[in-house]
Amino acid sequence: MSLPARVRVTRPPLPLAPTLRSAAARLCPDAPLEQVRAAALAIAGGAVIGAHLVWNGSEAQALETGWRGRGIEEALTQAVAEGR
Image (tube, rainbow, N blue to C red; front, top):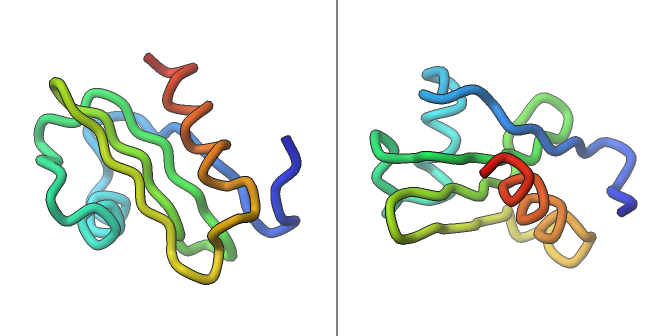
């Protein structure tokens, strides 16, 4: 899967570090961050632009508007699936 040149997708260790936790909370405000069991983040230019979070019985994915439709959503989904 080809992503835009500046974008990388990562599965950070849990619990999320404070900076990553803040970014995940901004993107997925309804996610119970203390219950997250798997996470994938999309990063561009040092900023978190997308998140896919999984917790007991549910999950959420969000991506900043300008980055949608470039394969990042699929890469986040794949990264979370590989980390489960």
